[in-house]
Image (tube, rainbow, N blue to C red; front, side, top):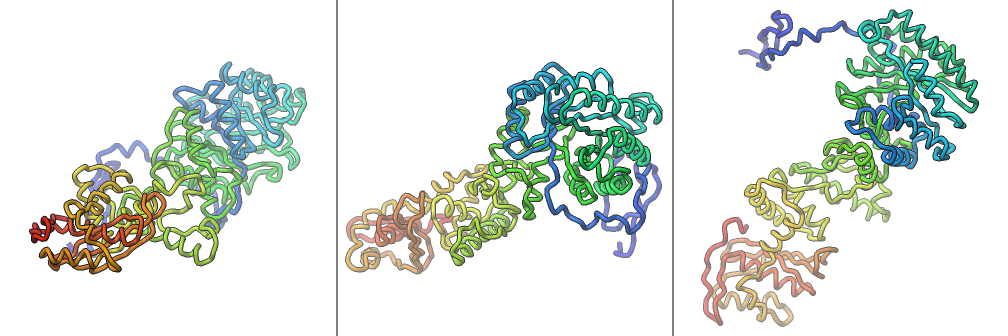
Length: 582
């Protein structure tokens, strides 16, 4: 079929013929896609007015953790008081200044936790806590009881506004939903006036992202007017994508449109609350910040209903990776992860950005080689500049940030399995034990480890790599006794003269000696490439002196060549090099 032609196929939705390029032979899936055809979201912005496009956040937003409310309500086993307190203390240590501490009308545990924080003096002066309430009079009353006596708090009113929820869940008209918002806001104002203290308000038109934009704007403006939102006492207007239904750019357009059309924009902290149903919550949050949002609600590592809330750790470290201060201290990310896993009793996935066990790990040989070379290049630059590596700009292939800046180690950066290459294997020996393999030996030892991984079908631990290396290259075998012939000013040549006298044609082609690095267990490491009967073979020696290490390397090479040592001055028999010895 020529490249200029197309082929056609039927969709499972409407069975109409649709053109498909000749190079794409995919066929209809047979899945009921017709059930999910929906009207496209309303175009809110005129062509050419999408100001957020191409704009990136240049500073951290106000981070608001909802781990103790939205995250907690999504757990199979909600947090008890001990785990709640552990989570709250963690959030404070990390630098959160806006923490939603619960839904006090939901249960006695929720109510008691809020009371303990308020009455126990556990809330730092620079931290503002918020409490969540639905738009029901008795629950609003209970919420204000929970924060009685506090100096400062935010009461968060939330109810759904979208058409599907209005008609199916609540069976209310738009006017009735507007009245619900109006009455609930007025009740909050009355209770706040009675309570005293600095009580501010947050309003969430839940399901904002699928609410008619004009209705969302009208109801938001109504609440802002009732609570008298001003720059000195702003309303937090929180716009949730309660169920993520559209691509991230649609949400960003909605945020830009709302920000431009709100009546009291200077009296509003514009907040977003992205969920991750389509897997794009992080992108939606970043686009929303570019579109005018001031605040982001989310959780540590994205815990939340269904596929979760936006992950604040990922958002913060995305800023960090661009040289922008996230205003959260995530320098010991493993400790943060352990604490969150204990509180949520859920593991953080191995591939979770920045925090997962494998996110800084390379198994692929090409990736390992690039990382290893990048690390060496960075170290060389630091040496040349006379500064620690930590003071140089980070620029290493495949690693967007320095793992050590997040409390991670380099040990797990390169791990070895059947997909690994010589560079990664050499990196493990160099960084763990200071064994710097010459280039020729790297390729050869890579093949040795490849055989090990092919046989086991599993990852090879660093200790096993070291053991294989020592067994393969540092064992002198039957040639050990020939060390006695290494003497004089040139002990290696004296040894080889005796070897040749026994009928073994052996000479040194290449020798590299290094000081033993930390963990090598020796003062010197010597790598020697011999020609034995004109065949090249590597040997490695460890010794207290350079000469001793060189002698051991020669004897190891002789053993690996397959030459057999004779008794006395009898001629050893050459058995031929073992398969794979070179």
